[in-house]
Image (cartoon, rainbow, N blue to C red; front, side, top):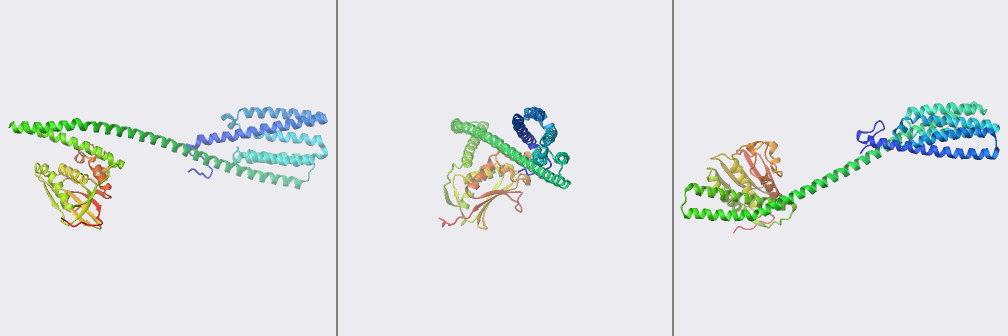
Length: 448
């Protein structure tokens, strides 16, 4: 919110402030032209009633003033109108003084009344010009008005003390003019600042909506492509399984068996990745209803170990489980094992040959705590939160994850869907530890 005390407008509001300034100049030019026509009409009426030649000369001056006012009105929307803002002030003061002086000369005995009315005219001019002039020019206009009013009062034979009073009134008018100017400029800056902020907010909202639309289109396209890949990929896996069985039945060479097994493993990995992408999207949109059932932590961790055991043995990595038999948790038996499988796959990928992985389940602070420790390299602190973001991986090649960067993001979504959380924590004796914290079940079932 822009609320300057007065000095200068911010850069982003400068065009709007200039536009508001031109609008005030336009308003001032319109009032000046209207007043000129009113005075011209009054002068014509007075001349027709009196037929005094003095009124004719005064009418010529008022007509000239009207022409100049019309020219200034025509220039009101151009920057040149703002640059010559002092000219209208000088014109107003000079025209008022000339008209009042001529009127005093015409009416003679009523000169003091005319001079008194002149004070009101000068006050109006000073206050009105305060809308468009800066403080030094308002003061200068006030001094000129004081001098002109003093001459008019002296011409009308007014006592000096009344002249001093008139000057005080004009000084007060100048103060009001300065206040009017400062307040007007403040209001202009506030209004233009609010308008600028509103436009920027509207632009940001439009850009956000466009980006959101593009993101939805992209996600829809990815989901469509990934979904359509499942059919051909399932057929490929079935064919590879059949080929692997036939090669074993025909006792083909070891190289052929290994090649078929590698192809089957790769195809299965891609199928799992496709399932993970689809499930990740459903978790993001809240379209998965969890089937939460009481489960033994020991049973879940043993199952995860069993599924990863063959991969671990191929690299001489041991996987151990440390969980009490009587510790239970509430989990979805389809999604939660995949969370553990992702963590184990990650641990196997970064643990050296001959390394060790430990799956631990404990109860702490009213929470069920599941930990996956491994002897791989330490994950940098700067990466510990980043790796759980979508499509994010570690900065170094050592800590880059296989796939699309969805594995740990999927783990985070599953943990949060269980009202829990997952993080990388420092545990004594282990370089890397992924820790899952879940609410402790309200009622613990009796073990079978």
